[in-house]
Image (cartoon, rainbow, N blue to C red; front, side):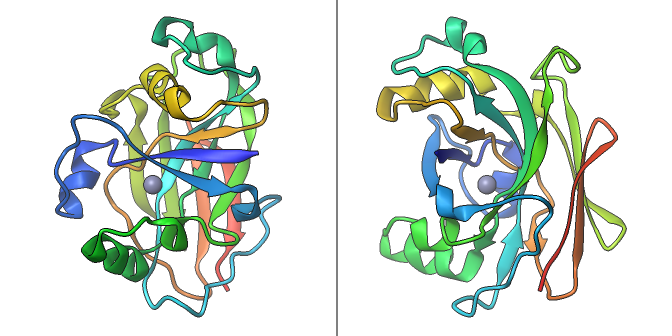
Length: 203
Ligand code: ZN
């Protein structure tokens, strides 16, 4: 499986990193070796001094597709969850300055802690979902999927022009404002509509 991620999908987050608000989606991919499940701890990598959290709603693809039309995209997912797009911000900054790809900063081992999923039958409108990330008991990010610049069905349509989507692939849908640094000992908890989905430690 792979994780297709969209960058800068919430205007307030693009602004906080001094990035322009995009006019077309910016994609990158995390490989399956990035996945962390079952609330396993995340180990800070030794190649970065500035590792950031980015809480993101994801959808799980349950049907294979390519060149999916936006209006048919809802047939390709039935479950959502929340993950953290862990980012080595200093490494990413160096890549950006040199015009290099971001994989070392975004796709490294363990950089995608994932919650389990909820069926969309419980949450019928994908663009009306509230989610939160708390660190050490303090809320640091609060998002509403209605604020996405590119809604989920558009992301699927655009991404599937380039990447065939397969069963089990995940789409990370971008992070709201409030990203910041992770430190050893932090406890991260994330919520979808008040339901605790993820609870893990940074080591
Ligand atoms: Zn992200």
